[in-house]
Image 1 (cartoon, rainbow, N blue to C red):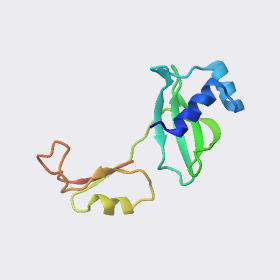
Image 2: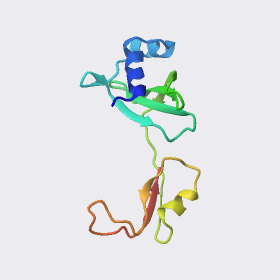
Image 3: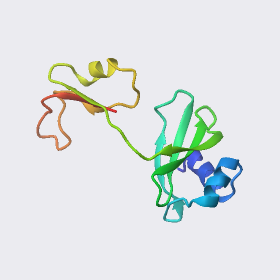
Image 4: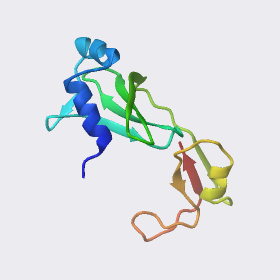
Length: 132
């Protein structure tokens, strides 16, 4: 089943309504994959009321961003985001993933607990980790 956000992104790229989209597409090209815009990420976790779809721009270190209402999947606006990334990671040999997560207000954390089996399922992790 198709994601309504992606359908709206495609429509906005093919027939821009927002001036921001028109301005960026006048100077830049969206990177395509199988005749579809290259969606790098649909961020549903970082904001309480907005989802953001990140579309890769060809040969550029930034993304075109499409901001959607979580409630209605309505396209609210278009912007850009830097393509650089930073990471935050914390580990513990005694505190599990859930308790480490509670020590920060960051959303969308990934990681594991010290006694959780590794992906291959043969050995458990010797420490917990949260990563943002």
